[in-house]
Amino acid sequence: MVHILVSETRSALITGLTGQDGSYLADQLLEKGYDVYGLVRIPSMPTSTLIEHILDDVTLIDGDLTDQASINRAISISKPHAIYNLAAQSFVATSWKQPILTSEVSALGVVRILEGIRYLAPDSRMYQASSSEMFGKVQETPQTEATKFYPRSPYGISKVFGYWAVVNYRESYGIHASNGILFNHESPRRGLEFVTRKISYNVARIKMGLVDKIQLGNLDAKRDWGYAPEYVDMMWRMLQQDEPSDLVVATGESHSVREFCDEAFRHVGIDDWESYVDVAEAHFRPAEVKELRGDASLAREKLGWAPKVDFRRLVQIMVDSDMELLTSHREMTEPTV
Ligand code: NAP
Ligand code: GDD
Image (cartoon, rainbow, N blue to C red; front, side, top):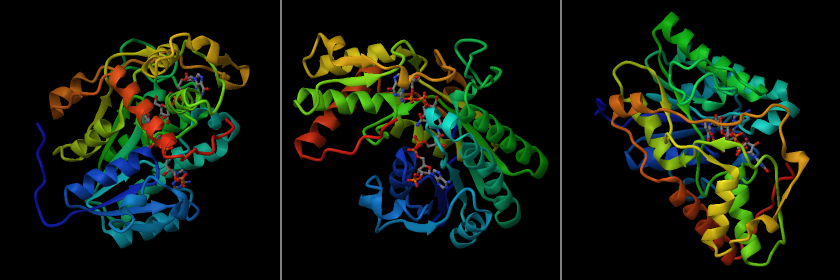
């Protein structure tokens, strides 16, 4: 069960504050009374809309996971009780186009954080954003903490490296560092390049007559999709454990991209959705992860965690949010990937 740390105001440093998870985590930590610091890349500061609502409540420290000095500086300034390393080059498709950058940020970046902790904040607790992409070409289904990794992309490889760096620093130096092996989690704050948000956003545009069609890749890929705010809550819970550990966080159900389309279009009253979707070679990957499905029994047992938002509800939340966004005339610039 969760052992909750109660003491004076605690401080948390979040890398990846401007992303989906970082922004939800900041909301939740502020709610719990933490002083929240974010390591952010300078160009993100004026542009990220996801943290606009909390800009007066958090302290931004400019830095980059490729730059050890800026990480050390952020740790020195924030004196964190907890460090959540959420920053990454997180888009799998881009990792084939920028494999070196992906490794620098998502693999070596983890070691840089761990080195910062080792020398500057050895008593702080660290959460590492590990990923179900590490299972890649899955060796068993469902995947658990004991399932062997078989990454299928430069992104997956970098996450495996980061995972083992955390385990090694824990075993070598006694650092309280944990890996959350999170399966896909989505929300209205998801980037437009990821398939769920690409679908929800374009379904809303099609419904409102703003575009005619959407281009997708492999409709048969299956993922275990959960709701991001619930997954972010698990990150915090993991750092409340007396002993660090590595845990799978998943819903236990998988659904295809095709099913996601089906639900999303149906939600806005479009049944013949196939005529609105073109399958394009450009959106297929050099090596595909066909299906991911996780078993979060251990998380349930140790931390009492269970997801509440199911697949259908998740799709509805995302489509409704994008309908609302477009109704208020806020069309976004879509990425070209
Ligand atoms: P996201 O929305 O893509 O956010 C990524 C964050 O990393 C952004 O804040 C980005 O900042 C930052 N970043 C990128 N490169 C950086 C660098 N060189 N230095 C410092 N910051 C950098 O990702 P997310 O969905 O919130 O995911 C959070 C973490 O969980 C990631 O590590 C991801 O790989 C991992 N993960 C996600 C899922 C999922 O389904 N969402 C599942 C498993 C694991 P900018 O605003 O400057 O770009
Ligand atoms: N992005 C995208 N765009 N994916 C598509 C498309 C498309 O047009 N068409 C089909 N897909 C398929 C992809 O081939 C993949 O099999 C699946 O949809 C999901 O793709 P993404 O939404 O891009 O997510 P991901 O599963 O590759 O990676 C996400 O989840 C990981 C956890 O398993 C990211 O958030 C990673 O950072 C995270 O670690």
